[in-house]
Length: 277
Image (tube, rainbow, N blue to C red; front, side, top):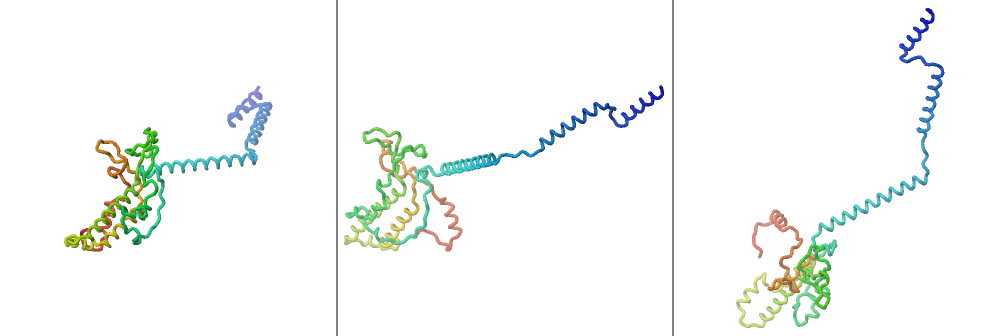
């Protein structure tokens, strides 16, 4: 009796000391089998998987295509933003190239632009066919309005198409008109006998013939250098309707900031003199 009791106590003490109940041999075999199963499964999961080479190539090619597509979209969006940032009139011409031009005197233009030899006048070569008037199919798309309505020659409107005038050629037209008027005035003046007063006025340095001709030539080159492509709307008649022709008024131009140029020039002046003479 004591022997059975002692064995029971030893068994209970062992279970208490080792923190686990004593298991039978069959249970131990079952546990060993389960552990072997888990180890085998872990080994299978940890074994590196070999990816076919062609699949690697396909994945790489796919990533390259995605990258190129994204870059193309970004470039396209950037172009659209640049286009929207442009002055509405400039949208028609896009990015006009710039070049350096050195100004030189040119006596070729020392003639009456509208004189007897008008057809052979070099002034005519400054205006392109069409005299600078352009056709805009969809003015609203360029942020324009007020152009002269165009028709198909039968009096029918052509779905909103309008005529505008490129500012640079309008400027050259105005300069040619001034030059012509002055040329005729000088011709009349030189034929007069009693011209003491006019002689006094025109003999001043700033009014001398060679200075005036210099100014006209200088302005001609300055205008063509600037190349203002602002699209000007048709002028308004007395009845409030658009008239085919332009006066240039009421149209915004994209210009270099005048006040900034004025301030910088004043700050870097070389002499303290005033006036414009």
